[in-house]
Amino acid sequence: MDRLEFLKSMGLLAAGAVAVNIDAKANALRAFGQDSIPSIAADKKIATKIQSLDAELDKPVTVVIIGAGDRGRCYAQYAEKFPKCMKVVGVADLNPHRREQMAEIHNIPAENQFAHYNEALAKAKFADAVVIATPDNLHYEPCMKALALGYDVLLEKPVAPTEKECREIMKQAHKYNRIVAVCHVLRYAPYFVALKQVVDSGAIGDLVNIQHFEPIRYYHMAHSYVRGNWPLAEKTTPIILAKSCHDLDIIRWIIGKPCESIAAEGSLYLFRPEMMPKGATERCIDNADGSNCPHEKECPYSAKHVYIDKRRFLGPFDLPKGYTADDIRSKLKTTNYGRCVFRCNNDQCDHYVAIMKFENDVTASFSMDAFTPYGGRRTRIMGTKGFIEGDGHVFTFYDFRSGHKSIWDQKVSEIEEFKGSGHGGGDHMLVRDFVRAVSAQDEKLLTSTIDVSIESHVMGFMAEKSRMSNKKVKI
Ligand SMILES: NC(=O)c1ccc[n+]([C@@H]2O[C@H](COP(=O)([O-])OP(=O)(O)OC[C@H]3O[C@@H](n4cnc5c(N)ncnc54)[C@H](O)[C@@H]3O)[C@@H](O)[C@H]2O)c1
Image 1 (cartoon, rainbow, N blue to C red):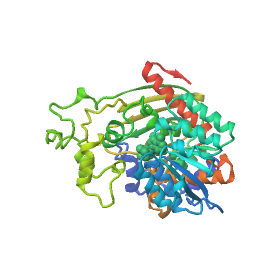
Image 2: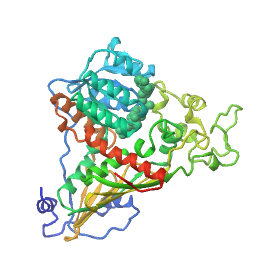
Image 3: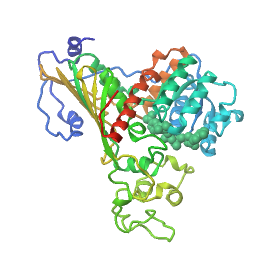
Image 4: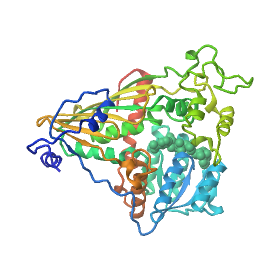
């Protein structure tokens, strides 16, 4: 669709104004602290077709889940929803609770249940594909082995902790002629798909600059990057990859041109012993001597507040069915999740900014921040003829010449099929495209193949190089 057709389809060239629903549109703008909206007439909704999650296959693609934690379970759920399209026939997880749970849900025979992934990959190929959802530093080995065995792979991001390993995985995929889909789930979310469609339609003219913001949310930062799975860059990956490789990928994908240089800054401001309030104790509650931290009642990061009072992020606790506050409390006594956020062994940045230059002088700025009350993404896209502003759920397109604006606000989370599919529906849409690609043996059915994903991963590695060296890095 060219710009003219697009504008017509949006009703932006039509004469006669349609009343503006200011309230609905205000929400999108409030995210950027803009409560007053210019009163522009003639709005229409941007309607994009949201496709079904059903891959509509004649025969289910069989998969082995390697790593049955949060992400492994999320992808396996697709098989529960669409048993005609995917079947989980094997599982490997060191954690017996998770392994058994997955085996029970999917009726996996005992001979296909494994603890270490090496056991599963010591067997001859017994499924079409593997899903690799182990921790960041445990992607490379199972992926290389699985490809050599002839499996197609759904590979969690980040691909691997070093650029060298990322490239080796790409080479291995080519060598064995296999499909590797990287879990850049945002590319599959209807919101981002629609955003890209509007940009690609030419409606904004030439894309000149993007401002993209990833608000982590203060308690998510503490949970994942201070107490939880990714506290040390060296042992996992730097946060620009561990958390934000999706964002670099989305920026690169929307711009559609190679990145030429990147410069980054960032540090760990808050979560370190030097910032600890006086007298803070090892754990927020139930210290070895029975004491509670004197700051527990006002500290926003209090483990009691986050996990017991608010019941946030309980997934890693592997709680029994019908668990009580006491079950959570006992986990806080024994795991890192009960520790004071100023006394954890962590070094991930809690704020990070990067500026990028792409081919043809297009620029982008990215900012990731722990200190926000909300999560998600916020994006502004500046073009020569129009502007887009979005909050991860709703975006507004402004046409300069007509002065009209148009809004995309399809409520994906309210569509029955999409319930439970995280990342704005992207999680299960990715699986849908993956099983289709495997079934047809056609990687073109995917947008996040290993080859295109490497490029945005390299941007992440170079951002970190720039941050550490205080120099702009050419890519
Ligand atoms: N695409 C996304 O949006 C997204 C979001 C969150 C996490 N991730 C990535 O997904 C991956 C998994 O994250 P998660 O949150 O599910 O972590 P998790 O800790 O919940 O799950 C990882 C699982 O791997 C298992 N495991 C560890 N070593 C193993 C081994 N040798 N053999 C078999 N199993 C082993 C663990 O027992 C655990 O159950 C990470 O790389 C993470 O960065 C991606």
